[in-house]
Image (cartoon, rainbow, N blue to C red):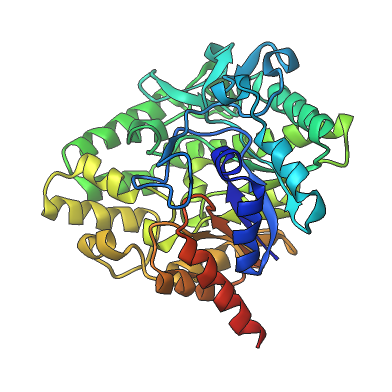
Length: 426
């Protein structure tokens, strides 16, 4: 069975009766993933309006906590800023729990772990880029207070609501997007904890930083092929990538260990990047699926796999010719073997084969019997392209699909999915 993401404003503004009516139209939804804490993201992204929300045209996520829980009391050293809606008495998770009590839906709360508006001892837990600047709103998986904070919060959430399975998202180092496009955030982390960890593995940190500065200079000069050549061949870069993957894997493993000391019945499902990108951001499918047997990733072919590819290209390249050159270098670096121009990509995204290819890579990289949800783009998309993505996912090694997301989708798309699902049953 399949699932769908909900944001807090969906539940507060529309109510569960309206939500369940539309989900029942789809005919194949078992899992609902309500967001507990937001990221810095316009809803819908990157622009547009919420097509069936009776209260808001759009909602701006501010990286805040949306549950009436005293997060500072739970873990005083590090905690997330509490959203103003909580001060007004709103509790979207409780509303969903009560509303779903007479339905067959399974609720899996959805948590963003390393990205948000955090307070307290942020200085000791921050991400630092290769030039010594903080990467705003990101926590480092090697920060000493991050695992204790999240283990305590997840235990507290289970005590409050009773849920024992959680989807954990933003379990990685920063990509190039966020509040603004910031490619410098990729070359991280150089906080004291990461530096010490790299040095213990005999990684030459000054040489690594020199290499990153060399790549940055080439990118600034719009010399994209030489930059990619260094990134693909530098031993320092390879060591850094491995360190990042080990850091994220250890973070997840330690988090589970700490939680299981208190409640061994709690399970963590993983929200990951598509495998063609995930390796760079610290996500090792092979190791992570030893810790968790269920994952979702998002091979949104219309959006370049969920990555802000267009923002990245146009950050560095200022003419059509240079943008084409940068795009081809991007495809080369991530081994995306698609014969497509940048102009075609801007109009149509990747080829539909991206969906099946990424799902099949996930199956190949993951532990046997891992349950794989293929993320399905459900906004800023036409009906025929939605069906195209569903069919590509069905033909792949994925076990099911997870729609992103309820509040951003035009109502006609719920009916489109329902008709497609019924057609398969006849």
